[in-house]
Image 1 (tube, one colour):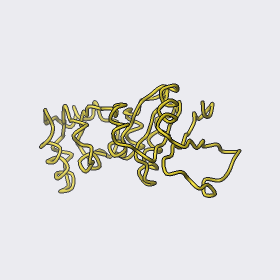
Image 2 (tube, rainbow, N blue to C red):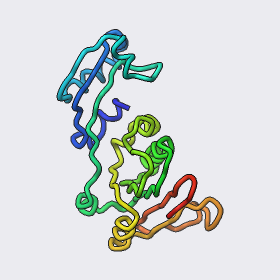
Image 3 (cartoon, rainbow, N blue to C red):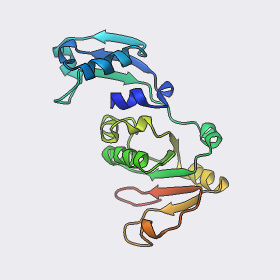
Image 4 (cartoon, rainbow, N blue to C red):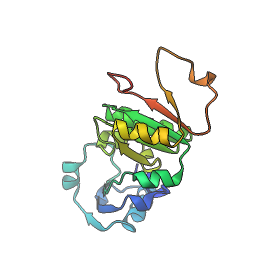
Length: 192
């Protein structure tokens, strides 16, 4: 995840407040290179013992580096200014792992931005970050409620496609508009 963070074109939007590292766990040149890159941009850097590092790290195969990164959603104004054409709407999703997976899929399929509508989880939760494999640093996110999202899409000429597992056409049979929003609904309740 931190390697993806370092290569993100949006890195300036996610400053590192605090970087913690455990020298005993930095065992490869690869990990050392990532650490140096992070140290160059972190506001505060601290070396900690292995025992201290284990107190806040819950992964078994950790690289020995932990960063506290300030999360910033995309603003409404910046979203409009960028003129995104390929958007995914995640509507009231509950599972952070599913949200993270959508970020990975969005990156792989050329999605420009994600609009998070009434989520029941946090985009920047530990599980979401892990499931996204760092892609949440690549895909801008705008958080809105249902009415705001609906107005934004309609007023800005998006064609809205609803992800429905049982009805409608297969995604491969559709001829998509130039400016589109694909909506994925809640795991339990579907699309609002």
